[in-house]
Length: 87
Image (tube, rainbow, N blue to C red; front, side, top):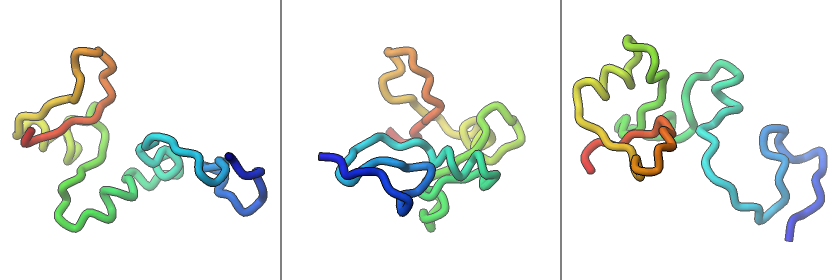
């Protein structure tokens, strides 16, 4: 059961307690100009990279050009922009 919304909830996450949702790739951080995700910031080994795949000079684009990667369930044609290396 969801809780009533109140002023203590984050503007970018106005959901009640217990509401499960998928990752938003920290759209609120990107929109604010942070250009990274909480996961990428917290990952000390840089196992998670985040960036603009359309910018050939970006770290993520260069990494994907150098290493083979896969999109999970590419057969669905969703093109989520999420790629995995080493699988």
